[in-house]
Image 1 (cartoon, rainbow, N blue to C red):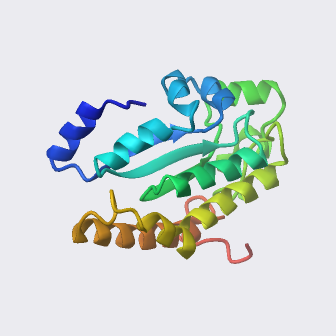
Image 2: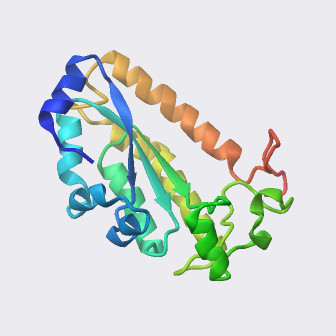
Length: 209
């Protein structure tokens, strides 16, 4: 996570409108667990310094977060969504932590007996997209899935879209940026809802959800 004004100025002058940034978490314990130590210094003030540099240079940001680490709670997940709204991000992805096979995370959770669906969630016909395939430390699996779903709904709601849009330094900077903001927010909201609880490999969500 860089706060280099010169780099941001160079990006803005090159014609860059924005970029994707993996903030990953606002919880220091979670950042340490995922090895994102470069983010720790910026996270101490909830990334306010870094976000201010981005906005000052007019860069629209798509922020990515990973939720469900052992340091996460319902309160930290709600705080993450609020941080994304307050920061006026153009878009944000609230990705649930998924233990992919062959990774250290999958091996650790297996050793701790915390994997669901027999540790092979991707093969279980009962598994649905956005379900939690493991037992979190601080809340039940279904509560984690619900909290992530709530974060997406809060961020993509119309009040949130309007609040984030009213930023003269980024989204209101030009008609082009305004058009990009509204077009992509509509697309993201539609896709988030369409994919929620979808069966893996199918094109439609589970009608029984």
